[in-house]
Image 1 (cartoon, helix red, strand yellow):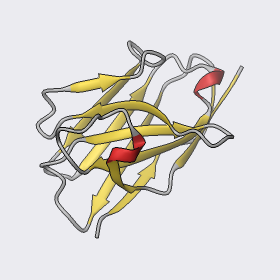
Image 2: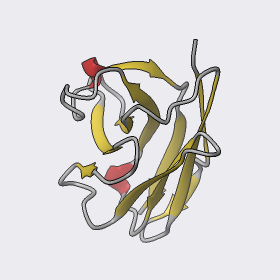
Image 3: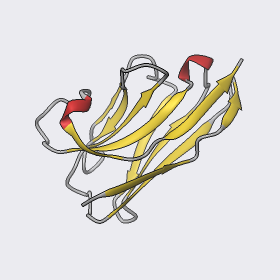
Image 4: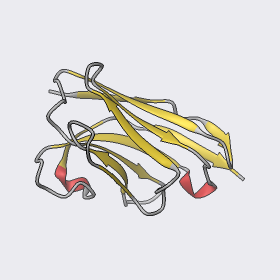
Length: 125
């Protein structure tokens, strides 16, 4: 069993920066891709970023490329998302998740097996 806990979400102004953190407990996640997704009001959970087990591969959604940076600390079992130049359209609940198979697509939420409870990010204009 894996527990993921996100933190760092809050209300900010457009143009501000914010750093989200995801702490994992119950299993070492050094061998797994980790991802961040977000969900605005509605049924769709949108891919944001993913990082390979040793951080040599990072993948970003086009909407955040150049503004967001995903990183991980395998010693601490954490994954962070640095978000810069925030826009109102970045407003959402942000979730971290564990991808269960290395070879499956990192951008599809269906390929992730463990999820945190989410942290709310609100960007005002």
